Length: 567
Ligand code: C2E
Ligand code: CA
Ligand code: CA
Image (cartoon, rainbow, N blue to C red; front, side, top):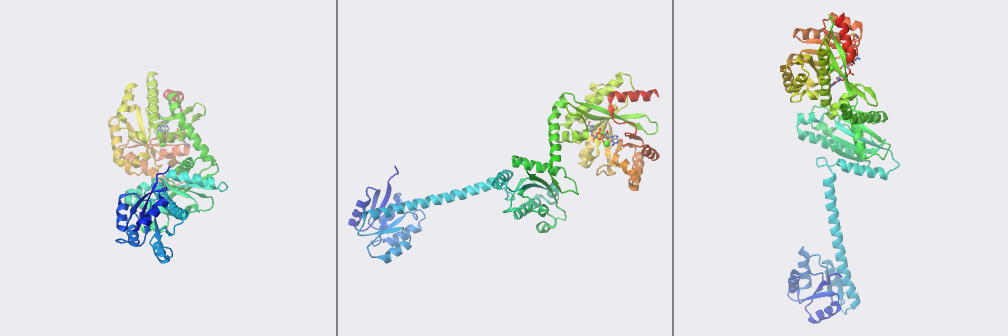
């Protein structure tokens, strides 16, 4: 049973108090006060649930008491029922205006009086509960905001975005939706150039833009860093409207730097796919156009899906492939233009996949680079190269050095030189047996770090080959600054020479310059006799290409060497 409620009867007439006490004694604990002042003392002392108040009293009358109660925050919600004389309507109105909940008047009808008081108490309790619920709601809303909204931009976090998008899809089963990911092009540069404060401002502008475009239409959130995502019914939004070109807020920042977005679009056709996975897929789409200045928007489709599934499959098979010896090297000879002798062989890895057959490195090297297994793979290839040379020596065959590829990531292994020397020792070989091909794109990174890495390898006696020269952002400066021995001109260059006068001039001068500073020039991808004659005419040193030989299995390569030696 509920605890009995406490009633305070305030009346200067003892008889009145006795009558009221008689009416309520079975329902409430009763306290009595003879005037307002006494009542105040009791209110301070006890927890009171309802007050029956006479208006005409000495010392502190009913109105003064009500005034006191209304002003004190601790007591203002104790319900007061005013006890008036019959016919004193004016007093009743004044009392109600001052906050009395109800009134009773003599002669008392016991039942009515009891009901009125009970109702007043119930009403007060209800109001209190409602108030509490309101406060809970506000608190919950605030807590939800903290959890669901990104602190920087105030839009949904990844988790909240996924949840609300799921809800939206469920509520609109007939609508076709599009999920789109947005990514700021080279956001890191914005942070580096203008500071993180400006970076944050840019992120905020994008968030506000999404909000403006999508509020009431779809969902939107910031997934991480400079990655945003939104979901809306197909056709409702012109996606590039969310772009930042000519955006007044961006222009206001006066950055003198074009901020562009990449868009990855995923059309939601299969709703059993989780929103999380859709976000990932939209991101994969963006990855296919990152760094592409012409293409800003890409769509996830079945072709891409198949490609990605295949990649996933290959990624899963890498470890076991390495363990089961599914990788081997093919060797491609590099010839001296004048003597036609083989000077070097480049080791090119092949994956003889258990079920898929031979896979080209163009397909799997980028995957190995992405998940870090490239270190294992390169080491494996270096060892195969050493084994190959060792067996040539043991069989008394002519021995040429083997050029191995060193992936960008591996170039910065802290003990690369020592490691390679240890490997050579194991097979009783010398550093001149291996040449190290470093891809040109490595040269555009931290120049100082690169120089250190190359110097360390040079100190150990290795020959350094700069691979794929001319394929990227190479500058002739690297030829001057880096201690390289050989530069390998990318095959795209030789293809251009016959059609472009510019490429021709550059090629000619490059060969001349390189030779003048003591660097050997190898041109790769030579496929025709015309190209060979041209390269001879500009004094190129060495060539590699299908004209002489494709990459071939080791055994085939050794027979070529043998034949050459016989000639
Ligand atoms: P790369 O180092 O530039 O290797 C030269 C590529 O050009 C080889 O492709 C070779 O087969 C091809 N090639 C040679 N002559 C011609 C020609 O006359 N015409 C045409 N069209 N192509 C020619 P491959 O073997 O498919 O290798 C592709 C790339 O994979 C290599 O390019 C290299 O970057 C990478 N790679 C290969 N093996 C390894 C390795 O063991 N480790 C690392 N990190 N990367 C490797
Ligand atoms: Ca190479
Ligand atoms: Ca190359």
